[in-house]
Image (tube, rainbow, N blue to C red):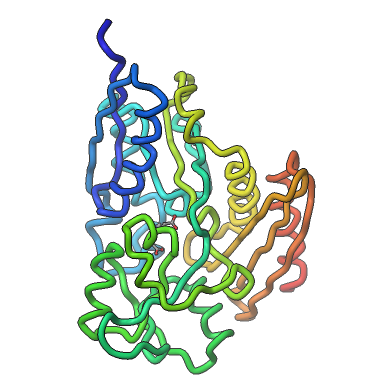
Length: 293
Ligand SMILES: NCc1[nH]cc(CCC(=O)O)c1CC(=O)O
């Protein structure tokens, strides 16, 4: 019998491909009856590199091309960094699996040769900037975009004195040794879904073969974090951060909300039962919104 072919779409950046391959190898091992094909493509978010994402249309820019490929059947599923996905799921292309989470922390990376500092930190993320300035009031930052390898090259050429990046991305690129300092999730609350890979499929199709790469715990933390951000209408220009952990039947969620008019940063935490993950996110969002007023 011919093997069933599964076509898997991914952005074509080194990180995206490494991450996608990580899951594909697991699927291939668990399902030798499947033939898996990788199809990579450039997304608008990879092409426009001189402006901040929120200025050119937000997170959807990393997905549009892959959603179109799902729509016309060029691919059967796509694999993304969850934190790059819009907070609103597209009903026709639901998230059908959430990977085990990599290291969810943000980290500071110093130049390869020479000394690092926070004199000129490369980051375009308001979430990271606000939390950095709380830790290092003298820190200065400058916009950097482009994929992780491009950013590291700029750092090593002296354009920045350090970068803030996600630990999971560096680890998956085999560059964990470049990490100079870890920020605990309390020091720098990560982006919702940071470190999680999400699989997007077509509505109504059978994706049971993805059980081998799906983590129920990761789904719970992701649902809580993303519902918090959604409730605050974040993900675009307003910096919002959320980090959840599961302990038995309990879910602990920490969030950050920036009230643009007042310029105030509000953080807070709540715990709830795992069955109410999304409600917990909304509850914390309402709490922080109240406190910011
Ligand atoms: N915005 C780019 C992006 N999207 C996902 C990751 C890393 C992997 C992850 O957090 O899941 C990165 C790089 C970074 O922020 O350092």
